[in-house]
Length: 351
Image (cartoon, rainbow, N blue to C red; front, side, top):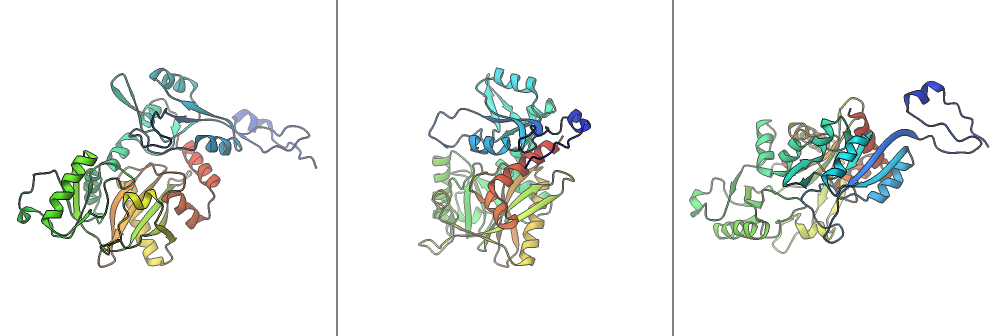
């Protein structure tokens, strides 16, 4: 069977789609240029890089996007000259998980740089990423927006020399102010007394080189809510999932670094419509308050009264098999390919 080419000249002139090759069956490809931008990683494969928010499976994404778009390529940025060449080429979309580059002793934030040249990108701007990455700043913004979050304070070793001076009551939960993937969170993060408080704050300073965020411990269920921004009207779609963690030796459920690393937690769909709606509302409001764009993830935990509270946000969520991808699968029945297409489509529609 031969599919006839019914594409008119007007469509070709607008640069939207390519005609089918005569007497052959090929998918119609959208005439867009997409560059998948990555940076060198001189450490181990998939090792953490402070300037990379999303570790991309670039070859897999190249294969997927090439099915739908005409010109898709992988670009590795090694120096500032490479970045300058990128904006001269002016692709229709830069698909990247890079936050910033460090060239000539200064940071160049990729998405803000692209914004100056009118080039579309995925994820959020520097301002939003700064809001999200500093948990102290994020929680203050959330409080100002009148969104529920646990009481908290920031501290360093030696600041509180007496239990009576600590501004909130035990039990407390302690984690680093900066950093993701539950780094610095372990079985000692829940503290019940002053001795444990002092020890954990010191541990975070020594091992994570970070101040500590100390907050009221929330004993309820834990959730993560994927957020997709609609490419047409900018509305937000929330995709809540519940994260179930086995109790540790002390009887607490802690989503710590080792649990995430070893993929020991269970993720399920939120079926209670009232809880679903509460989580969705809080997540959307939090995403907007932080200045999120395109996609993101909001982590939420219940208190003892089953009231949801903002925990933290990730405006550059992992796209492989993490919570964002699983929220897409469970809520929308979305395949990995569908997710990548949706992200690219939202990015292309942003300008």
